Length: 78
Image (cartoon, rainbow, N blue to C red; front, side, top):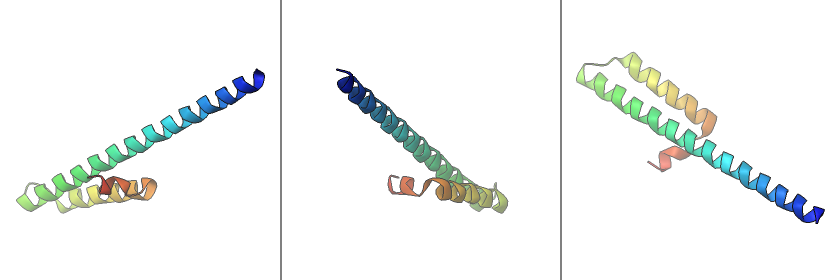
């Protein structure tokens, strides 16, 4: 009986870990999407004359940092 409970506990822990990983992945995708939107908004504002080149560059740098840390998978889901 103890072996069954140990296996059940291990499977539950694995499922919990997988769930946490999926949540982390979704949060990274959402953050990447938000950064991409900010870059687009900064670029649009710059081209319309109400934004600055520096704001666009800052948004691009933030996006590139996110991609370095989490990958660019969120770009394919846009």
